[in-house]
Length: 157
Image (cartoon, rainbow, N blue to C red; front, side, top):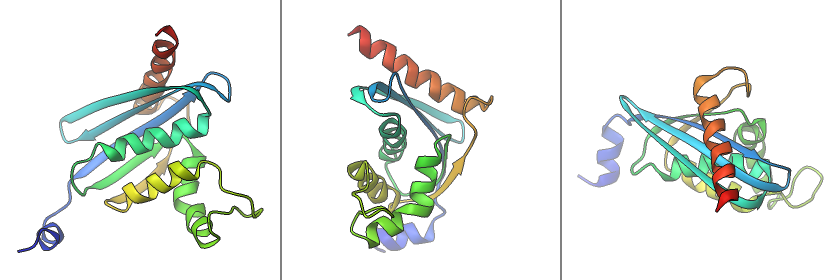
């Protein structure tokens, strides 16, 4: 049986991804944090960029989480970024249809990252969830701490 048929006949593993970005100044030094969880297994990832924006860090956190998946999965991706959630669930289809122009007919900001997200998310069944930031959501708070630590560590290097 082909791999595609094998995949179609097995239940996809559920992976929860929690993602957050932070920026000290906007633009300025930025960091991102991601938690991947599947069953009892959990992995934390984080990274730093010397000169970036908060939106780029939010997108990068989601990209890092999806990039870490080694096979097709059902994904529940949780973010406090309305930009990320709405971008993937409401705006991106129109951007693509309009040749990567926004509603004002201007080039879409962060197109390179949106294209990566589209490509990565096409490999999985992704549900996008939004939570209010800095409101006590444990995983979101942890991702924020990872992002802020990445900024602090990046500055000290």
